[in-house]
Length: 116
Image (tube, rainbow, N blue to C red):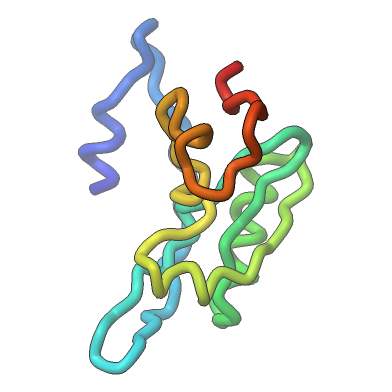
């Protein structure tokens, strides 16, 4: 995979800086392997929210992201419950179409959508 990723460049033709992350120790619920991944992190103002799972590999992931983002705080967020829904932090931030929340049951009337 590394060779394939190294072939990609920016639109200006510059190579991307690849930073390897550890593979999370496999997490299972019954016979089902859950998608525990450190790549599902979320970059926010001044910080990087990193999904962690209470695994021995968590610390290595924290250290790698600190090297990648030296000017941001790395904030570990326990995400074992989230991966049972087959997603994690970055997945939770998916976009909703304009107007979705106004039509969602329980949304306060008259409150603007996230796009407005």
